[in-house]
Length: 185
Length: 185
DNA sequence: ACCTGAACACCGTTCAAGT
DNA sequence: ACCTGAACACCGTTCAAGT
Image 1 (tube, rainbow over the protein chains, first blue to last red):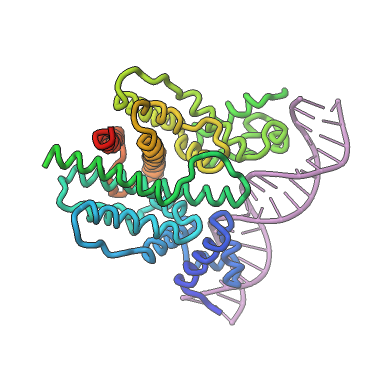
Image 2: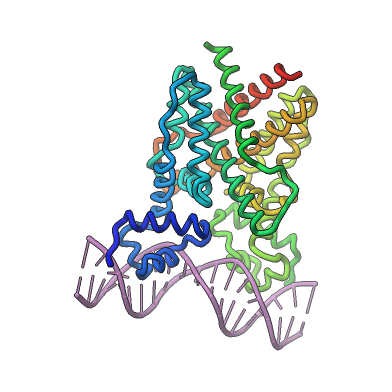
C-alpha cells in the first residue's frame, strides 16, 4: 500500500501523542506505516522537516478565530488558544518550540498575537507579541515536561504550573501592556 | 591518567562551548578525556546527570550578587545576570532549560529572581519569578538558536532577538508588577 | 577507584535497485 | 511515484574483567 505526505504526518502525530517525542523516530514511524525507514525520505526531506510539518499540523488544528472586543480580551483569547493547541498533543509545546526556534516556521504563532494587539502602538505590539509567545511556549513546555516527569515518578517540590499560573502570568503581561498604553497613548 | 568528576564536567563544558550541544556525546567526551566511553559511567550516572552537572556549572560560574536598591533595580539585575550566564556558553540556555524542566534542578534560577522581589506581596513575587524565568530562558534560547541557524546559513526574515528586545520584554514584565503593587499595596 | 573490551539495542540518512 | 535491501556512521548504556 502506498502513502502520501498527509498519511506520514498524521501517523507521526499519532505516534507523538501516544508515545512522546522521544519515541517518534523515523524507524518507529516507518514500522507504524508498515514500510522500510528509507521509504520515508520519499515524502519528507529529513526528520527536521517532518517535525516542522507536525508542528504546523498541531497549530493548524488548534487555530481559532479571534473574538471581537478590546485588545485585552483579544490578547487573552489568542494566548489561550495557542496554549490549548500546544497542550492538545503530548509534547506539542516542545515540538512547536523546537521548530519555531530553527526552521522557516511556516505558521508563526506570533502573528496572531500581534494581530490581537491592533490599536496599540507598533513597538508595544512587537514587544507584546514576542514576550507573550515566549511565555506561552515556555509555560506550556514546563507543564508538559512536568506531567511527563510526574508520571515517571519524580514528585519534586517545585511549584506546579497549571491553568491558574498561566492566567496569572498572562495578566501580568497585559498589565504591563496597559501601563505602556497609558504612558504613550 | 585517572580523572575526577570535576575533570569530566569541565571537559564537557569545553566541548559544549566549542562544538555545541549536538556534538556533546558521551563518546566524544570520552575521546576528549582519552578514555573509553564506558569509563564515564564511573563518574556520572547517565548523560542526563552529566547535563545537570553542566547546567549547574554554567549557573554557578554566572552567579552574581544582587545590588541594593528597589525591587525594580534588583529584578532587572537578577534577570540580566541570568541571561548573561546562559549566553556565556554555546547552547547554554538550551542545556539549562532542558535540565530545569526535568530533573531535581540543584540550582533553581527562580530563587534569585524571587529574592530580588522582596517587598512585594507573596503571590506577586511568585508570578513574577515564574514569568521572568520563563521569559529569560525562552529569550536566551531563541537568541542562541538564531545565531546557530544564522551561522548555518539561514537568514530568515524573523525579528532578531537581542539585548534591546530582552530589555523591552523585561520592562514590560516590570510594568506589570508595578501595576499589581499599585493595586494591592 | 578507575578503566578496558566487547557487546546490545538502537539512531538518521543514502543510494542503487526494483515495480 | 513509491518502495526495498543493504549499508554507513553514528548513539547511550551495561557488564565482566583487568590494575
